[in-house]
Length: 340
Image (cartoon, rainbow, N blue to C red; front, side, top):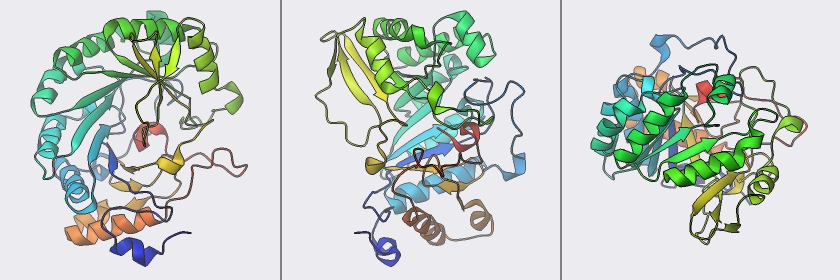
């Protein structure tokens, strides 16, 4: 039984018709990126949003404040594109950590530039960092990203660890015929470095819209490949709304996560809402509809009015992402424009 829109609008927080409360806000700070990962965008890049349509630093902070103070947001994760390209990033994090109640603040990045910014970000209160890295082989990194920047990413990971942003989480996507033979190698490296590795199924969010389910390396395949080299046991810690199924590796050596976003979706426990770099609310990573908050914000709307528009947007959230539905269509925006 689903709740009515009126009842959801009166209820504190961000609730949808299926009883899910959105407390985790993903904020894209830019659609620009300094890599060209094959599963995200073509080597020539994609058309970028005009600078005038992007939220200013003050507008980002205001919308985050409304989410935290009025709508029950408890976690904020800044994403991109590549968020380290945002000049005001450190101050945005500082202002976010000054909110009351204080949210947990994290960052998802490709790691390029993190060697310079890890310490300043930690100093203003950043809690956690996730770094995307699909291989530790220079040639494979170049083939996937079209940039020879592996050493820059590794330097960023070292800087994050030294800055106390532990455990550093590393997100990896396995691509068939490219790096799917490197799963065990990548996990062994992550365990030695003290990082927490998470394998993520490739999702239909590429700008080229070339994703094919038949070509995707599944979570079960990843588990099987890792099990050839390591002893994996389910983690005793409750998963909750976390996307990753976690496994202990070789007893107490560390842990690894596998995110089966396509083959075993976790939509029923989803607690996320997304804000794009141009100020649109998305209730799902795969949503084809958005709600514009930038326009009312720039037209002088009150915090209360913006919060009301935000709440109404979440009441329309679907039960699931629908990837397995024959009528499924990829979002018009690629991942680089939506934010991870």
